[in-house]
Amino acid sequence: MITSEPMQRIMIFVDETDRYQGTNLTSAILEKLRSEGISGGTVLRGSAGFGSHGMIHTTAILDIAVALPEIIMAVDSESKIQTVLPHVQAMLSDGLIVVDQVEAIKVTCDKGQPKLDKKQQEAAQATTKAMQVEAESHQVSEYMDKNPMKVGPDTPVAEVIAQMIANGRSLLPVVSDQNLLLGVVQSEDILSRLLSVKPGGFHFFGLVNNEQKQFSQDIKSQTASQVMRTAPPVVQEETSMFKATQLMLTQKIKALPVVHGQTLVGVLRLPDVLKIALEIKI
Image (tube, rainbow, N blue to C red; front, top):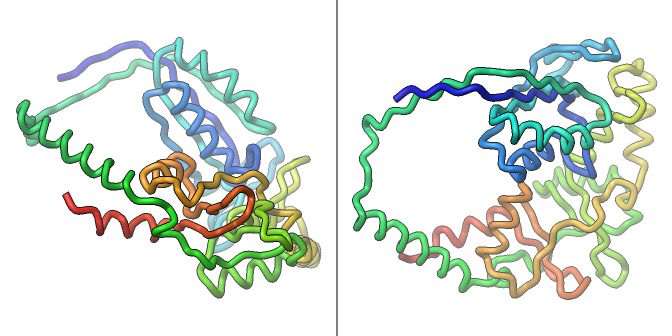
């Protein structure tokens, strides 16, 4: 079946290293589009490009491309696009938004996709409900790492990086001498600071070799407290695995600090969450 209707398209042009409130700007915009009821969004990553600063970025510069252009694109009704537009504008410190009228042609085909009858639908819903109930019966304390790696607020970033590499961690809790959770250091935050500093249009690759080396050394000599995220998402020991899994999926994170009050008592990581999928018996 083919249907056609006039709609609006929004295209947001940003750099892949852009940040918004401590998180990746592209991910934040996608989440905003989703929360405002936009039917879908797509991110296109450029292999080369330049913006208002006139600096060309390309995957040919390094094996790992930095500050390449990204386009977040969504198509929906004019009312929905115009509703979300002010929110997206407020999130940008440097970027471009394009809104244009389009004709949306939707093609649907049920061929090869068997439909469930009423009994099959009820059985599928019952199975899903049973899995949820099973997951809710398990607590985070059963699956968390009770002796997690952690760093202090004065730990140099260079040491944090070394620990992450040696132990395969993308997140380390930052704790006080009393083991109170102060924040978390994530690998993506360190990389964004090492490779690009956005305010003022500054880019790491705008520096000459000696300046790049000095800049990287300056960042790595900073402490965990200077690069950590404060007030990260956390869970309690008694939080159900179902709710913890939901939080990790919605926040797009691979690890969650587990606290008792403000005291760190463990870390729940994605591999720990996957264990419950093997143990649930339906």
